[in-house]
Amino acid sequence: MILKELINQVQWQDVAVALVSDHPWFRKRLESFEIVFETLSLMDPVDSECSIKIELTPDILEPKRVYPEVIGIKEGDDERWALSFCPWKEWLGMVVCQETLDSFSASRIVANCLFDMTFYGSTEEMIDQERQRIEDSIKESKEHPETLHEFKPDQMRIELSMKDYLLCLGRWIKWGTLAKDYYGENASWFKAHFLNKNAPENFDELERQTLKAALKEVVWEIEDTIKNL
Image 1 (tube, rainbow, N blue to C red):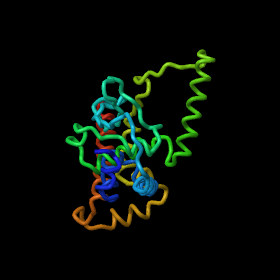
Image 2: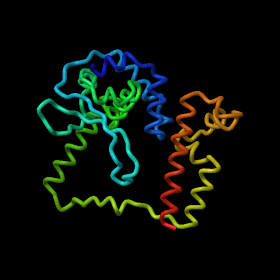
Image 3: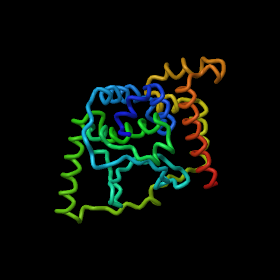
Image 4: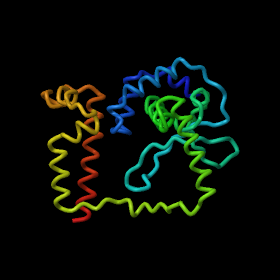
């Protein structure tokens, strides 16, 4: 089954729920993802030598956390190919490997493909510009290797003091940052859909998944802080 056929089988609302479940910080960008989804539904696919595979991969900075990683595979080739810069018509013509179809729902597959194909921009023009910028950067690094810096993940960890922890906890309890990070600068939508509802059973599926994913982030943040006490 190719990706275009999978897109034709799913509803946008189900894809939105899957997007928020795996990538909660994109809640405020759902409108732009929906535009891409509708655009893809109107495009014709072209053949591709790549197939789509999705794997649960540990985060490089937080190995205990896993995320769905979209990769390209080719028959007879052990290389794992990045697909983010592929033309969207080619994405649509890629076969989704059977292992991925067996492991993930159709809406989750489409959601993570949407995430990957818009990683560098929400239009193909923006993606082309980013591709050119990266190619220029690679050329510059080859010509001037003395400007390169080694990436060390261990140095990226943020250590929090007890004061920072309490501020962080208070921030989340007040919902202020949650409203801003997940729903944009204007928190009115958040208040109307969460704080003014009587019980979680009144939430729709997208609201439930958004809150669940956001609270998971809170738990991770608190756990990381406790380790350093």
